[in-house]
Amino acid sequence: MSIAHWSTMDTKVGPFTAVVASDGAVLASGWTARVEDLTGLISPSLAPAELRAKRDLGPVSTAIRRYHSGELNAADEIEVRQRSGEFMQRAWDALRTVPAGKPVSYADYAALAGRPAAVRAAATACARNAAALFVPCHRVIRTGGGLGGFRWGVDVKRWLLDHEDPQD
Image 1 (cartoon, helix red, strand yellow):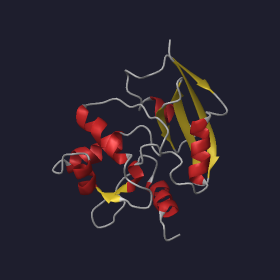
Image 2 (cartoon, helix red, strand yellow):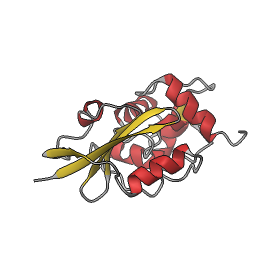
Image 3 (tube, one colour):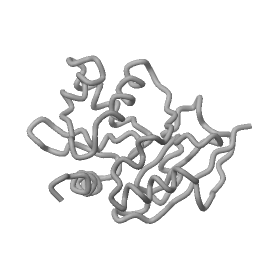
């Protein structure tokens, strides 16, 4: 039986919850106080049989605190586990290569994921990303600089991009 743990912590932009597998890999995360907002995002093949609240998720909680305090690469080394088709997997891996402070357009993101013509599929990969922050889909914006959508709200996306802006 697989057990996963979850925790919610306050951040400068609102509550942040993470669901972590027993081996420490992030299964889902985002700017919400409700774990229920995350559980449906986990691939059924990875869904834990049981979820338990835990005050501290070790390296994951540390990375969340450090990122929100200004250490923008703090989440980079945390393992993430998501499951989908080949393109989605490649697209999520590509997102992890987009550096803080250097957002890319959806077209550039599609190219990074190996399919330059698949702009809509790249946008779908962002929309289906269960592990926000650890797979930084907020770093993908529209051509021309528009924010585009974000599961956790455009205000949160704007805060994250401003937080990561090297001009600050």
